[in-house]
Image (cartoon, rainbow, N blue to C red; front, side, top):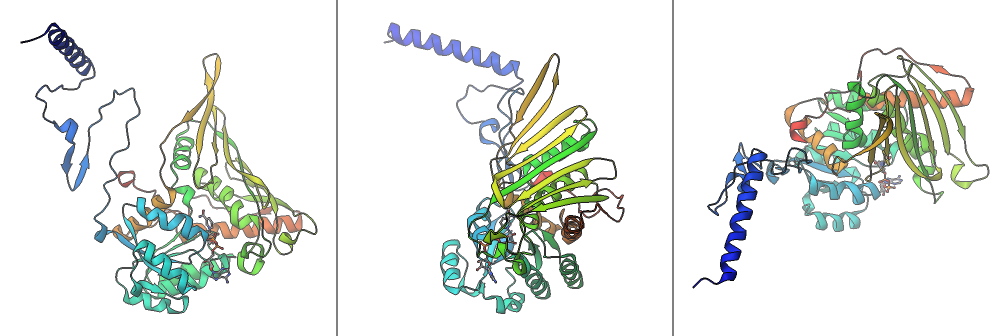
Length: 430
Ligand code: NAD
C-alpha cells in the first residue's frame, strides 16, 4: 500500500525528471529514462580510441579528453643518459604521463644508483649501460631514442656516440658549450641519418604555446616589446654549473637561454642585433669562473625589442611579458617546471580587463618526449631540432661578445620565419 509519503516522493521525482528533460532539450541533449547507459554515459570506441561527448553546456570549459596512450609495447623506447636531478626528479617520473614514449634503458657512471633506479622503473639489467658501453646501445632494439641529460660540456660526446650507435637523440639544453660543438653534433646525427631534438620544453608547454599562437594571430595587435626574466640564487660553488669547462658559462646558457629561446619562438623572427652587459658580485666564490647576472636586448628585424635578463644571484623569478599595441600578456612562472599562469590585459568598454586563462595542467616533459616519439615514428623533423640549438649558441656567443666589448653586435640577416624549426606538434596527438 502506498503511503502519502511515497506518493509525494513519486510526484517530486516525476517533476524533477520533467525539469531535467526540459533542461536537456534546451541544451540540445537527449535524455534517457530507461536507466541503462547510453553512448553519452559510456562513450564511444573508434579507431582504437575512446571518447566521450561533452555533457556540460557550451558555456562551460570542456573537460580534457581521455589521453588514449599507445599500447605500452608499441611506444617509442627511450634510454636516459645521466641520472642527476633533472633525470630523477622530472624526466623519469614524466614517462608515467607520456602517451607515446616509454623508458627502456639507462646510462650512468654510477652502477649502484643505476641498479636502484632500474628497479624503481622496471628497466631490465641488460638495458643498463655505463658511459663507456654506449656503443652497445646499437644491439638493443627496444631503445630508439637516447635522451642526454648530462652537464653541458658532455652533451657533444654523448650525442655523437648515441647517433653512431644508430639511435635518435633528444639532448638537454643548452645544446653545447659553443657553436662549434653544436655543429659537430648536427653533422654526426645527419651522417647517421638520425633525428636530433633539443629539449626546449617551453616550446611544448601549453601556456607558452597558447601565448605564441595568440601573439602570432594578431590578438595583441602589433607586438612592440618583450620582457623576460629568469633568475635563481645559486648555492654550492663546487657544483658543475659554476665550473666553466663543464657549464660553458653561467646564468646565460642555463637560465637566460629560456628568455632568448622563448622570445625567438614566440615571434618566429631572428634577432638582427644584440647588446649586453654582465655583472657578477665581486669575491663571490660562485662566480670565479662563470657570470651571474646578464642583461641583454635583442633587436628583431620588425623593430620589436626583447629585454632579457638572467641571474645566478637573485631570488627566483621566471616571468615573460609581451606588449602589443592592442593588448598585453604575461606568463608568470613561464620557465618553471609547473605553476604557469597566463594573463591577458586589454580594454573592455570603459574598463581595463585582466583575464587569467586556465588551460589545464599538462606535464611539459611528457609533452616534449611525446613530440620526439611521434617525430621518430612518423619520420617528421622535430619542432626544436639541432639547428634551433645551434642558433641559440651563436646568439649567446654574440651576447658574450657584446658584454665584453661594450658594443652592439650585428648578426647575419635571417628573414625566413621559424628558420630553424620543424613543424609544430600536431594538436591531434596532444
Ligand atoms: P645534475 O648535476 O643534477 O646531474 C648531472 C648528472 O651528470 C649526474 O648524474 C652526474 O653524476 C653526471 N655526471 C657525469 N659526468 C659528470 C661530471 N664530469 N661532472 C658532473 N656530473 C657528471 O644536473 P642536472 O640538473 O640534472 O642537469 C643535467 C642537464 O640537464 C644540463 O644540461 C642542464 O642544463 C639540463 N637541465 C635542463 C632543465 C630543463 O628544465 N630542461 C633543468 C635542469 C637541468
